[in-house]
Every structure is written in C-alpha cells, then in structure tokens.
Length: 137
Image 1 (cartoon, rainbow, N blue to C red):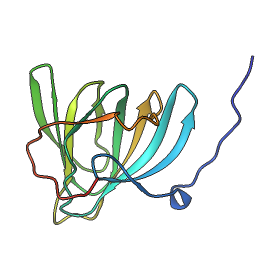
Image 2 (image 1 turned 90 degrees about the vertical axis):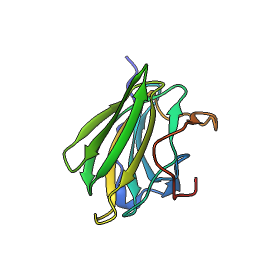
Image 3 (image 1 turned 30 degrees about the vertical axis):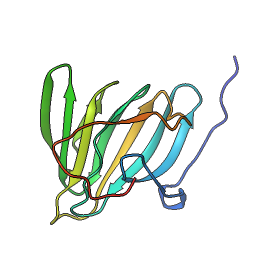
Image 4 (image 1 turned 135 degrees about the vertical axis):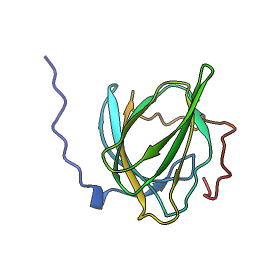
C-alpha cells in the first residue's frame, strides 16, 4: 500500500493570501485528493463577499473572536453567531457570507475543505448576501 509522506506545518510560518471572498487565509496542510486545511481571518468589523463553492464543502471551527455567518441552501436561510468553539458546516453549493463583530479581536477560524481547494479561479461563485462587503477580494 502506498502511503503519503508525513507533513508538518506551522500557522505562524504559512503564507498569507487573500481568499476570493476577501478574507485573509493561511493555507496549511493538504492530503492529495482528500482534503485541505487553512486558517481564515477577518479584522474587527470585516465583512466578506457572499459566495458559494462549485466543487468543495467545508467544516469550520472558530478559534478566536466573534461574528456571524449567513448561509442559504435549498430554501433554508439562517444567520448563526460565531465565537470560539463554534463549529459550522458549509455544504456543497451553500451560499454563505461571514463577518467579524466590530468590537471583537480578529475573527479566526480553521477550516477543512473537502476535496482540497482547487487551483481553478471559478471555485468561488459570487452570491447575493445580507451584508455589504468591506474587504477587497
């Protein structure tokens, strides 16, 4: 049986890039064909652009800060509070948008993406969300 090589990453050493929704993201670990992990961050008062994903779904865990996530799929729509320890899912095709509370420390969350985030620029599709974005994608 062919096994992947062990990998070890450090959040502090990871490159910082801009996600299509405007969030700061530090891509971390990946297992080919299975999933990838990244840390996302919004500044206090930051609001992402609303998007949906074409081929991936995600599980998020908030590690620092507070805010809200809006999600819409198949006629269901909700806004959920985010605080450390909150875990949410973003199933395939779900429109979503998130924001950090203005009086919070930066909102940080770790996300697992399944399958891994693709190189395709068309993965994040623009959607209409409840809030006006204030970040540049």
